[in-house]
Length: 123
Image (tube, rainbow, N blue to C red):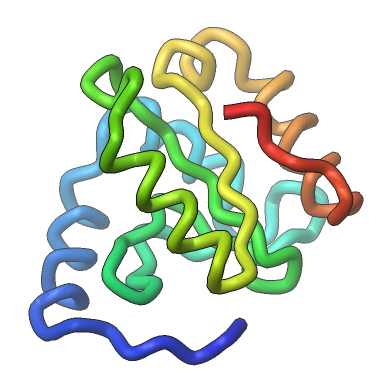
């Protein structure tokens, strides 16, 4: 993972986010933690440059975001995705309800993206 400086306060903000995960983030973390998903190492609420990634698989340079409806058509999220892509990451996004209702499909998609670095996220 490329080294990017973390702005002051971002680490403490990430710590708060780890403590206060949404229901969907918590359920997905149960699938990702401890290399439970296909042996892949994920970290949660990780500072990356000026941002905090929900879940990060450094080996695959993949960030997984779990979003609520407030993120629909968000200019901030588009700018964030561009900045993270410039750092070499792909950003895979799922809606909260996808994670809560279709966990197997979400996990299968994550596995596919970690194994095939040519896949590009659709959102």
